[in-house]
Length: 417
Ligand SMILES: Cc1ncc(COP(=O)(O)O)c(C=O)c1O
Image (cartoon, rainbow, N blue to C red; front, side):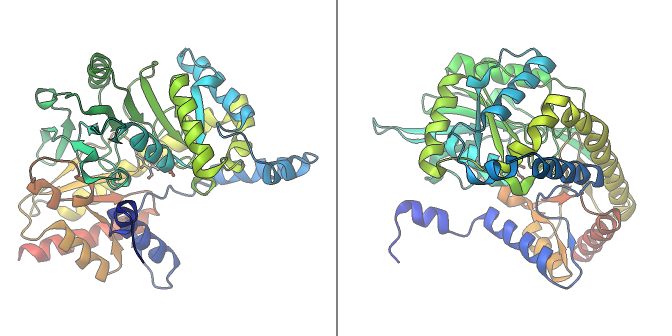
């Protein structure tokens, strides 16, 4: 097979491929696995009951079911869903948003592929444009989405040591220099993999820097408000016409419907819709059809606040407790302050092996985590920190999380002997 540069890039051994592969195998094999890798949200009985109820309503509603399955929507997305969502964002946050500000994609993974390659990469004048990630480590799923390795620039954050076993990353504004080649700035908030939530001040400052440089600020809100609401800090959702806000139906419990949302100024929404038409004609309608009346009635918002957020907040507290109990005082470690999302980010200080090796050892005993290095991309200089961290998904059953964390502690101890 003769491959193009695109073909070579997209078929190489990527972190996201290894991750999805491990996840798929762990979920399908017959042997018991402790699946603390991947980004699968939990199956919440209340949410599953809601989806089931909606499916029954759709089936009972004349030809609604057939229209959902047998019609293409416009490339921008389903009009009823878009109007309902614009109404929700106007009502809740007072944002000046209409249907012209919203485009749907086949999952927010696709949203970012479109945005990064529409704004980053080679321009028609032959200049290379780059996407700036101000806080590395950042979401593994972005790492390989550019068509050229130099499309992404990542910056090292400041590390605040909160107590002996807790830390938090902050944007290091002193190193931030928006050169001519930067065409967008991107952060996930809450951040995958760390559970960090950038402060309101950091977001305002990033927004101001982006405006001054005349580039959009992309905020990936896959875990944030108004849904799924996996955010435990009292911070404000943020949008204006220079922000491109990414949202998703995945983490509230509908990952298989592949529904991504982009909230942006009309120029960007039209551009994303054009890309949709070329890449996929239209978007899947199932998630949008299930969710539209739940947005209109306020049920989705209520469920996010009263079911999803408390569930993950408690899971996070519990996971940190398991970690403290298993790690004791003999393993030097710190965990990132858990402010949102469904991950713990653990930093092993002075571990004699890399966390890639730790991951391999854990895999041999059926415990799956994600080694830190895949989340470090675009950095100008090597940073040893990348081989000292792992990401743990705490959305699984408590007993699995506890047993998985105990296995991690045992392997970390064994590595130090
Ligand atoms: C920060 C972040 N952005 C985007 C995605 C992609 O989600 P989806 O394509 O399912 O909407 C994920 C998935 O884990 C994520 O963690």
